[in-house]
Structure formats: C-alpha cells, structure tokens
Image (cartoon, rainbow, N blue to C red; front, side):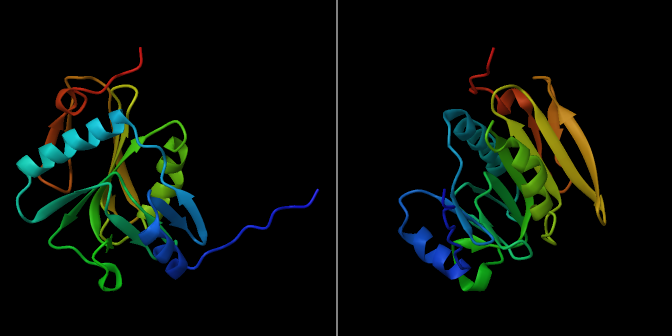
Length: 190
C-alpha cells in the first residue's frame, strides 16, 4: 500500500484559500482543517455570553464572536476562537482587518471532537500570546465551565463551575456572568 502524500500550505496559501472558502477553515503550521462543527448549543452559549459582555463591558473592552480570525505567530496557527475579548484596541496582523493578535480573554465551547485539543493544544498555543490572560471552556452538553486566569509568569489559577446558581467572575475584565443566564436556552443532555 502506498502512503498518501500530505500537502503543506504556506500561511499565504491558506489566507488565499480561506478568502474563497464557503466555510471557515483553520491553519495549523502548514495543515488546513475545517472549523469544527457548529451547533445550536454553541451558538446559544456564545450568544448569551456576548450579550452579557456587550451589556456590561465599557468601551475599553471589545468582545468578538466566532468570525474573527486569530494569528498565533509562535505556533503558526490561524484559528477562530468562539469568543475573544480585546482590551484597549485591536492589533491587526500585518494590516489585515480580519485577523487579530491581542485577545485578553478567549472562550471555547467544548465538543466531543475538540474538547481535548481545546484543553491542551489550543490552551498551550494561546499561552504564547503576550496579551492572553484568561480562558473559559464551556461545556455545551451540561452546566460546566472551566476557568483559567493568569496569576503570574507561567502561572495560572483554575476554577470550576457546575451549579446553575453559580456565577463566573472574570479576573481580568470587569464582568460577572451567572450560569443560569449563560445556559438559559441550552438543551442539556439528560
């Protein structure tokens, strides 16, 4: 049996392909991968969170939802986090208005296919960004939030929320969100 040859793309080739694609694709150091499946629950969670952010955060903090690309130069990754919050103005990659460099907060909604990667590989890649200070992982099948906040150089605290009357208090932005509001319309597994 003959092994299939894998094509590696340059960042420039990826950007050209992505501009023409009818769906979101991500770039991992030469490999192009379709964005993981989007679900109603993912949309409900990110929508509820962004609504709270838009209501509560002042002009110094700007939330972005799913369609803004992030470049992680140290790992050569282009990705689309589910939610990002940028503080004190957007830094664009090489003048591109569709790619940012400086999220303070990143939120990912977990799925069975991406959960391990979001916890490990993506989190490690995000930590290479100097601006990155807070990470939330939202389970879309049950009330469960994993919350990481930077406490020092290469030091992170961890909190876990799994009760509907819980409140996630962000450490690096002035925001509190109740789990009841966050999961209000999410269809949880029995």
